[in-house]
Image 1 (cartoon, one colour):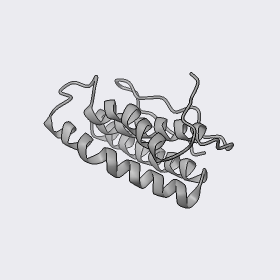
Image 2 (cartoon, rainbow, N blue to C red):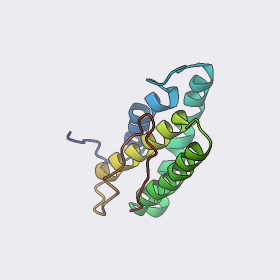
Image 3 (tube, rainbow, N blue to C red):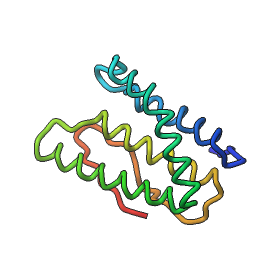
Image 4 (cartoon, one colour):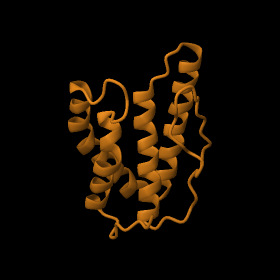
Length: 135
């Protein structure tokens, strides 16, 4: 898939947050979702997340995306370990974390960054406890 979002600006960040994170924040495809709680999460989270990511990128550049992927992977590992030790696995939270990673990988490309992000991140399925490697 060709990625086109130049220039790398706030509008591009917002558009990718809206298109990549919205299904995850609403919980599309998960039993019991979307629901009023997920709809409130979407309304509140999109502008806040966009602002935070834009500020981070402006302060740290391309390294920001790698740092975010590493951070979210650590959270995924913790959620998966907790789900393995004490089921059920929290698929809604995992879905959101994987969407954030997909967003960071997309913006990494959109912004012309040349360092490699972890390409082996895939969304979890039933009874799959994902692991993540850092950049």
